Length: 210
Image 1 (spheres, helix red, strand yellow):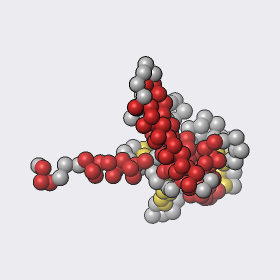
Image 2 (spheres, rainbow, N blue to C red):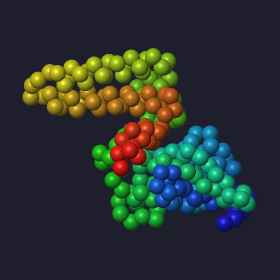
Image 3 (cartoon, rainbow, N blue to C red):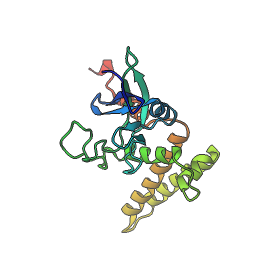
Image 4 (cartoon, rainbow, N blue to C red):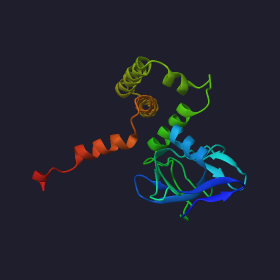
């Protein structure tokens, strides 16, 4: 692959790859500004050849694309975005542009990834004084940690309070607790995959058990 000059701009092909699965998700073009923005925000930016302007992936659809790392090839004329998709990447609602089946990103196995993506989008997005998420992320850590203590207590109360609505209350309070835990992860720069790897490590059979 090689860079190209279009309308006086130097453009580079960019391959987007899922950092967890290795799946190639899409191919687009970027100029120096898009590459810099991607590195700065950790959200995928490209250059639109049809609109002839910089664009952030998901700026209209809301399907942002978090990028962990930007790699350049040996000739410095093409790039690789190592991404953690939390939404379908293709406009057809498929996981990537080379897939054909619709994605189901909001199922029970992916919703925490989706939640983390929403929170990260708020964290790096434009300032919004009405956003509860932004207010907590900008506050001192003790404010979020107090919310964790509060929501944990609410979970305990719901679990210990019998009645017809017990299950629903427990579900409601558990969702609140998970949301605030995700805020803590964002505040301290922890990715969900790091927690998943730790859980996997703990539950991996030891050599002695084989």
